[in-house]
Length: 137
Image 1 (cartoon, rainbow, N blue to C red):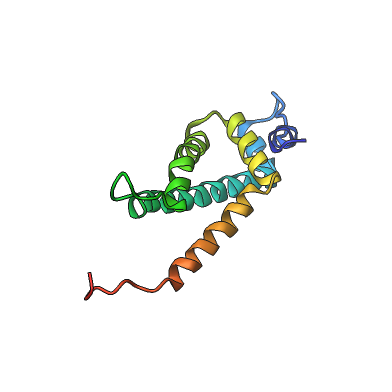
Image 2: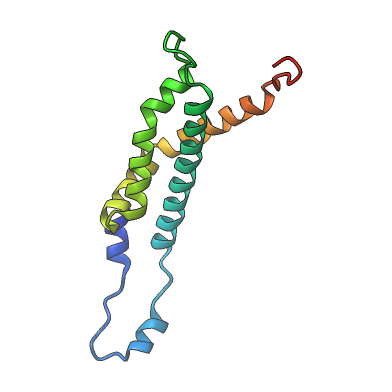
């Protein structure tokens, strides 16, 4: 059962005879909705971090002349930028059902955890990279 189906099943149906304020007070907290929001924010945060990393790589590792070899990071940025932008667009402006399905798929397949570990590893490599000498430039 997807998160959307579980959320839909968990929402209580209000009776017509109940006053509106009573129904609001009696409504239990919805842990599935809260979990979806947390997962959605995690997906957006991880994809945004990856997007910024790719944008930096596209500038930093672009070939200076047409004869230069392509750096792997430049190639990855060219290949993945559109995909990551599409995913972020869907997570921010798509209808609720589409967002729920996307978050559910990204979390169940483990893609967000893979992205998170990959970004963390890259950031560690960047931190340990020696600074270029400014005196010899």
